[in-house]
Length: 344
Ligand SMILES: NC(=O)c1ccc[n+]([C@@H]2O[C@H](COP(=O)([O-])OP(=O)(O)OC[C@H]3O[C@@H](n4cnc5c(N)ncnc54)[C@H](OP(=O)(O)O)[C@@H]3O)[C@@H](O)[C@H]2O)c1
Image 1 (cartoon, rainbow, N blue to C red):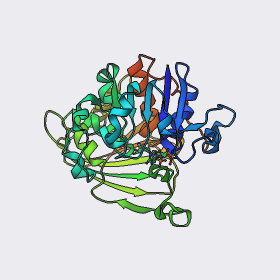
Image 2 (image 1 turned 90 degrees about the vertical axis):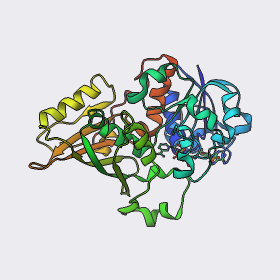
Image 3 (image 1 turned 180 degrees about the horizontal axis):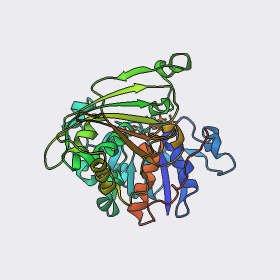
Image 4 (image 1 turned 180 degrees about the vertical axis):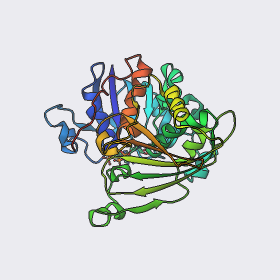
């Protein structure tokens, strides 16, 4: 199958290139960049030097393909969706433009009216662990918010079982979450060594948590804060869950095992000794895993769930390739087996 990537000069696009150039069932046909059209892709993604002769092309020069991945900043895809859809049988859009089902969520969380609301129901939210069967027959899939993904995966077994009264979550994130375009906040002297409250309240990914963790029409009571930390890749969620019942450690593990039995990219972290007792994003670098563990506060109903991902993999490109595998009928883990590095 021929696939092309729009926005391939960015961080998510670069990661898609890395994964798809090695994927045994696809050929990367085109990769777009307006700024770097004509340049070899390794000019911006030096890890790909010697792996491909592909050069960036402009959006206007895109040709038809089988699967089109779009990795543009949010707000740029929805106005052009008809044009993109005319180019490919299947689309996977990593931006936020088609992640939310309710058009009214766009003015609320993104500050703009959705220009193509009739397309929203055609997209499946591209998180395989939640929407596997729908994705198998989908033509259009969204990507996922990286912070939303680490929290959704951390909390789903508990919400599914109806045992959470409310959850207060902090996600610590690396700088690549902000994309390749520099800003004053990402300038090295400002960002380096910083532990900075980025969005203590009101982060947009809360919309994806509310959407995906609503069970039987019951919206979750959930609070989200995002903190920037000294990492390039990685997101670590610490979720303080106040439970409706007293659950034993065994019962909590059963909820998680049942929810994620057979999931190829969810690992439950359960060790009582050593330094890797809890999930840690550093060792997930480049891998598509989400590691999940927890700790209980004895004598209280506070359960602390801890989850980690690589934001560019399970939080973006890795999940998008997993989604493509489902949509195209390839084995779900194809091209995603890399286990990460240790030490790194
Ligand atoms: N970074 C993450 O951790 C992450 C996680 C989950 C989802 N995502 C989503 O993935 C998408 C891409 O994120 P990113 O971090 O890869 O961003 P990025 O590094 O800033 O890359 C953006 C890409 O879009 C292109 N672009 C920007 N403005 C354009 C325009 N007006 N017309 C055509 N192309 C344009 C850029 O190409 P040029 O070379 O032409 O500038 C670049 O290839 C976003 O929607 C983001 O929400 C990112």
